[in-house]
Figure: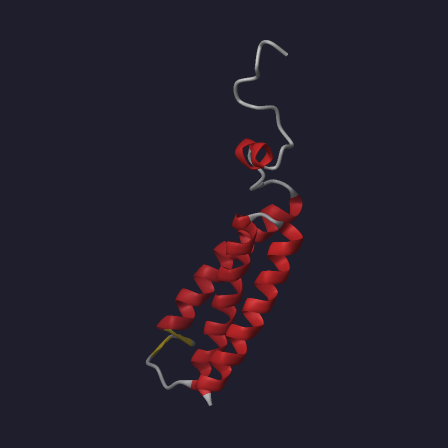
Amino acid sequence: RALLFYFWAGGLSLGGLLFAFTRWGGAGRVFALYAFSYSLFRFLITFLRQDELYGPFSQAQWIAVAIGLVAGLALFLFWTGRLSTRTMHWRRARGQAPPINPDPSD
């Protein structure tokens, strides 16, 4: 039962990440989305297992919560524009920034 959930979660994550990459283009945003989705699925799948509990959750769930919080914060910062993956190198690679050493003869 857990194996089927792994396959389902992996396929859903892959589809969402490919869609996000084509829409956002920033690798940092896509990685933050991957980390957030992985932590969410990991948290849910651990309910199907019989692990030792540390308080209300297992160790894997506590780690998933920590990763989810950090990735969620990164996604929030990307969404509000306070964090950007579109650096000068990114703009230059797409022809949206002036070259590093412009030709003085032009």
